[in-house]
Amino acid sequence: MIRILLNGCNGKMGQAVTRSCMFDNNMTIVAGVDATLKAENSYPVYTEPNQVKENVDIIIDFSHPNALNGILSYAMEKSLPIVIATTGHSEAQKDFIASASNSIPVLLSANMSLGINLMLDLVKRATKMLHGPFDIEIIEKHHNQKIDAPSGTALAIADAVNAALPGNEMKYVYDRHSSMQKRTRDEIGIHSVRGGTITGEHTIIFAGNDEMIEIKHTAVSKDLFAEGALKAAAFLYDKAPGYYKMQDIFA
Image (cartoon, rainbow, N blue to C red; front, side, top):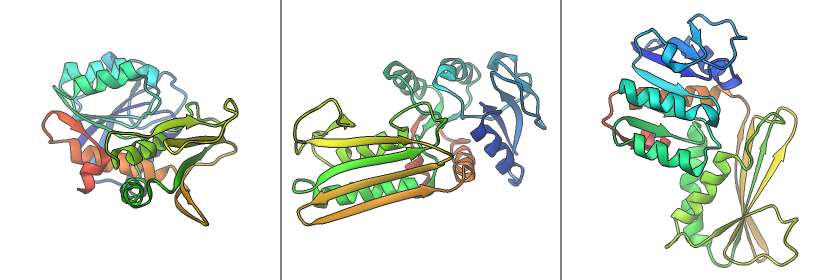
C-alpha cells in the first residue's frame, strides 16, 4: 500500500483526490497539509509539512505556488518522491523544482489528464506539418475562481508547438489589446477566458488560407485530474531521482 501525503488536501482538487483514492486498493492518504482546516477528512490534516507525524511514501501537491518551497524542501529532507500538479510557478520556483530532481524523483505536470497529454502529442505532429503557412492561436477557458492566467496547460501546449520546431522560434503573445499591429508569422497567440464553473477547455487553432484546423480538449469533471495524479504517484513511487513528465507514464 502506497502511503500518500496530500498537500492542498482541502482545496477542490485535494478533495477530488481524496474521493478517488477511496476506490484505489493500492493507495491510501495517511495525512494532508492545508492552510485551512475547513474540510472533514478521514486522515489528519496539518497546516505545515514539518508537523506531519505519519510515515509517508510519496507526496501529491495540489496546492498553491506559495506553498511550493515548504513542501518541496520537506520532500528533499525526507527523500520522498513528489508529484507536483500545481501551476503558476515563478521562474525561480521552476529552477528549484529542477534542482530538487537531482536528489529525489519529481513529476511535474500542468495537467494530469490522459487526453491532454495525447493532445500535446497531436499538437507536435500538426505543427511539423502546418507550421509556416498556418497561424497558431491557443484559447483556454476555466472557472471564475482560477487565479493564474494563462493556464499552465495553455503554456504547455505552446511549449509543445515550440518543441516541434528547430530553435524554439515562436514567441508568445498574450491577448492583443495593447498591440495595434498585424500578427507576425512567429507568434503564438494565447487567450484566457474566466467564467462560471468551467472545469477546463483548451483549443489550439491552426488557421491557414481558406482552411482551419482545431484540436480541442474539454474536461467535464475534476475527477479525471485526480485519477491522473494517482496514476502519476503509482508511476513515480519506485523511480530513481530525476525530472519526470506525465508523458513518461504513457511512453
